[in-house]
Length: 154
Image (tube, rainbow, N blue to C red; front, side, top):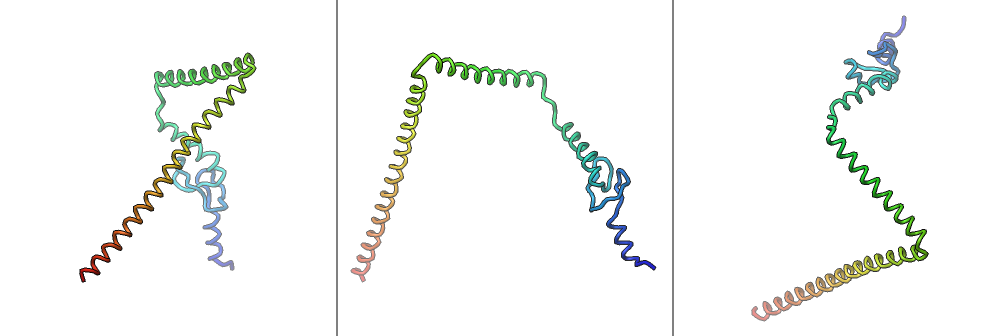
């Protein structure tokens, strides 16, 4: 006579898919929105996930025709400006022998300005550190002086 607990355990492990009636080899997946219950891996991939995605797409409202036109115009402007700048740089590059040198000079100027800003920030940090140290030193001197005054009074 077979062991009934082993048979019950096998029945619990080998449940049927609620969609295709096949045997699930693992715990299964939630079969909503197709049906209430569990489904196998194949049905989850082929049926349940696409149905969920469809329901999500239905929730997101479509944009109006006017909004589509506005977005299309914005994209056209962006594309136009990219093309214009590409052509502008290509034209200048071909016509001007010193174009690359001018571009590098502009880059050097920008880098110099950036370094100057960084130097100013660094100087401000150093000043703040010195100021903080000076302030701390003065506070310590005042405390020492106060302690001496209290000693003299006592």
